[in-house]
Image (tube, rainbow, N blue to C red):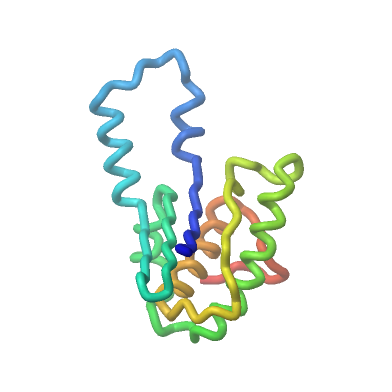
Length: 146
């Protein structure tokens, strides 16, 4: 069975959804689609049958320009942090009255007993850091650090 992780943030939809009387030209639509395409990070591994798709405007740029380089954190460090972040994320998904359902849309199926490899943990960990900084959220008992 193929496991799929999805992290989808609809801030782009919120930004453009506020002005409903304005017609969106096809040129604007094409630009929005280009932004989505450029800001989509996809990680897949057929051997482990998993896929992570992160769609959040600005994450790709942030990952390349601001995040610590690969190798800075150990895989074990990121796995421990990702486990904490995923538990808190999933709890927030289940409480839409308490937490913004536009930020926490889907649960993340992350099993700490599975070795997803360095790349997956690196990108997932950095997404959680990016998310906390961008949306002023706190997913654990510690301050997000870069």
